[in-house]
Length: 256
Length: 280
Ligand SMILES: Nc1ncnc2c1ncn2[C@@H]1O[C@H](COP(=O)(O)OP(=O)(O)OP(=O)(O)O)[C@@H](O)[C@H]1O
Ligand SMILES: [Mg+2]
Image (cartoon, rainbow over all chains, first blue to last red; front, side, top):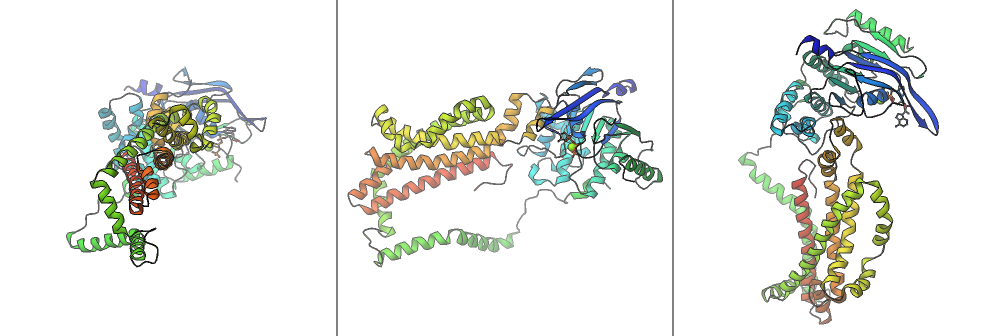
């Protein structure tokens, strides 16, 4: 794959996106006139206070929710419903309990009609990538929370999406596992160069992984802000630049 | 640090292999387990036998177990009870099969398509709340006194547990799993086959086990009311003729039938649902 091609792959444009829900017969505006450009191969983190519409935005990008106004373009084509170039990693692993770990990872390929043998071969590759090769015959109930989440990540990678949408993927994990998973995700990104849009409530996670951070505010009339994270990779959480970035992001939240 | 070191036990999923020396200890453990599980049952049977032979209770009402066993043996050896077993199995078997063949597909359909459920629910509720036994005379009028009305009344009562359990199973499928499948581009059929169906299997089996119990219950009732063959008839008939050991032999056979049906269903469920913790 040439550089030109990989730059084109997984480019997201959001134009004038608005979404409101009705709550007790009142309209609740969650997103209003949002514009956003995400380059191919970029990692964008979305942060903001609880209830500000992060999940809503991600679900619209995934095609699981339709906006009231505005549009989403992926590599120039408007989004209508779910699509093969996108894969979603939810906060919970969402594994199918009746499939082995390997068949769970191959699930996305299977429903796309890839022959089982080929699907399993590709699934094995990504199971190795997340360090669970020896668990391919296990049932999901036999996994720990972190292992299950890694299986979910492998399943999403196996379909080789151009865009990976992640909604607080490590939110339920303990601090140790979380940090390892973040490093793992950074490594996977280096190898696969997929576009990643990552919703998180963890500012450190956002700085550790993202090229840019989108800060949504509680009030949808306030415009969303974009912050560049100009830190060299691989990133070091204790480095002064990292700490300064964290302070700046916290100030954005009015925490200082 | 790599991920493997985080939470991976050194040997995944290995079966524990007991060294030969601990065979005795294993045997003792099995015996202890057997005692804790079946001890009370054994005690009950012993008490029965002793109470009856010592005359604490009238042996005419509660005959000793050896007399019952003898009556059972005679009935089977002479072929008299064998015919009853065969006809009872046939009646409950046909009715149960009918309930499964209609109940599971209908339940899947109703669980999947709200419009179908909305349309069918009131009439099904009405049918379900009307006791099958109260309807038995109606079935006899409609279908005659022969096999058909008996099988039908059993089928009628047997249908509802499996139907309702199937509907419930489908409706309780985790919507998040369905959404996950959709994000991978699964078609409606694929979602049904790969997510909804397997997710419903455990509750379908709960319904099947309830249905099997119901089938035997209605079998006995139907045979007591209007039959001249079958285990239910034999229980009543033996009581009329004061053949109390034979009566108990038929009762034990019915109990054995119920246990066997449950055993078959549980084994089948455990084979189909190896992914879940075993059912008992
Ligand atoms: N299906 C829905 N019906 C009605 N309101 C909804 C629905 N989904 C979301 N909302 C509302 O939209 C707002 C944004 O929800 P969203 O889930 O996007 O928040 P979030 O930023 O992801 O929050 P969190 O950090 O807590 O996950 C909330 O006020 C919520 O009540
Ligand atoms: Mg959310």
